[in-house]
Length: 428
Image (cartoon, rainbow, N blue to C red; front, side, top):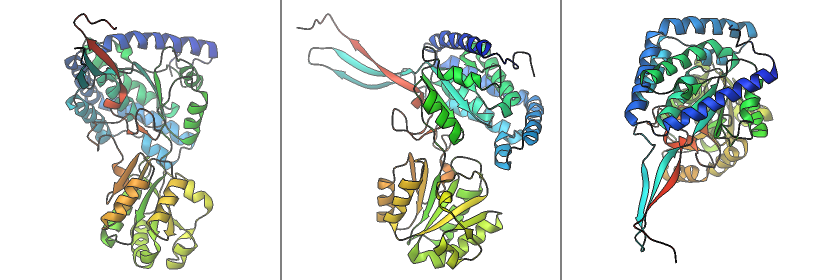
């Protein structure tokens, strides 16, 4: 650990964060008029740096992983923390995907000419400085930094203490790319300490940070929402549901449920609760339990589900509102599509929910009435990802209702301004 990482005096951390904030604000002014070519060059150079430093990244990550095991991190958190060849390549490829995206900054959203001859344009502009507070996943450093850069924003990225070494080296690769493109390295910065006081300082920096994006567990989100003096893109826990409707094809239902739960149990798009219509529960549940248990998943069911398949353990009320992020799933039998909608809307986190059915009418009812940021039909909730949506990557999935909802990509990291062009008009 470096000396600066060991900053422990709260006043010292506060002053250090203010220094970072001032540098980020200055960098944002430069990025606001940087060309698409400059930003793309920085992203491309950063991708190259990640590949070139793959060995060093994995060595740093091995230290983080060892520290995580010593702290007793769960298997799901260790999975989020781990970097290997394929994940480093995915980070680099993600930056190249962002290069291929249209540059949202400067895009004309709409234009009109008024009867008096004034020409009014609504244009996308960067938000300015974005603070991202996240846990475990070091790849967020590349995803968030890259998306902020593409949209013309500076970023302050505060990763979890468990990923400090990995995230610091990834950030250094991003800064290397910025400098190679002639852009300020301060456009992507991180607090030089693992002390949580840095989070508190960020939440008070309303003069220097324009929006905070939290990515992590419920306690982190609640702290940010309660303490932040800066506007927040809410990213609540991923309490996702897959609902097997009466008209669901059995083979499709098994395949989707298995993927939605077990492809990666530690991501926010993983299904945590499976709902099954009563009319087909006896026919559908044994096959669903078969594939889940064979994959190593613990299945907890309500009394009605247990009566159909005794391999399930008993679910409690807490299971309907728990984000496991692990190989555990809760199963509930429901009367019909309306009961499924009621359960999702009352127990879910407004993140991602799916229906499996061949009945288009039932599908439309579910898609329309479920109040979540992402609602799906006949596909896995694990597709809740900005990269899968064609955004190149995502800075998070917003479950709030203001400005951005769903995957937050480069376009969602912009605001707008109006440009008015006249020829001497004065208002009567």
